[in-house]
Length: 128
Image (cartoon, rainbow, N blue to C red; front, top):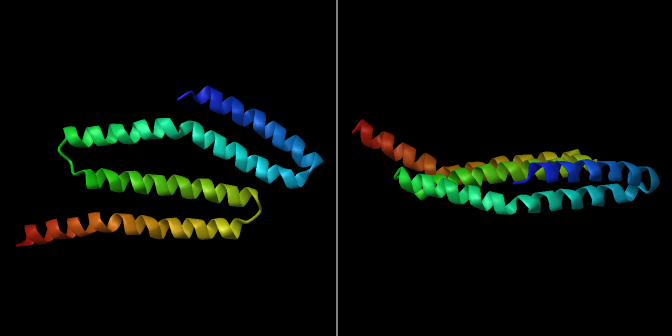
C-alpha cells in the first residue's frame, strides 16, 4: 500500500473541494464521495491480501475458518459503516448516518451469533 499516494490525493482533493464549495457548493458533496470511493478502491487489493493472510494464519494455527470469516466480516462492517456515516455527515444528513451505524451494530450481532452459539456449546460441554 502506498499511503503517501493516498495522502497526497486526499490533500489535493480537499483543496479542490474547498475551492468547488466556494464556487458551486452543490458539487462539493458528489466530488467528496467520488474521491472517497477512489481512495477506497485503491485499498481493495491490499484488503484482499490482508484477508488471505488471516486465513493462512488460521490454517497454521488450526483455527476454524468460520471464526476468521466472522472477524473479517465484523471488521468490514465496522469500516463500511464508519465510511458511510462520514459521507452522510459530510452531506449534512447526520440522522441517516446514525441509522447506518445502528444497522451496522445489528449486522455485527447477526455475524457474531454463530460464534456465540459455539461458545455456549463449549461452556455447556465443560459444565457437564
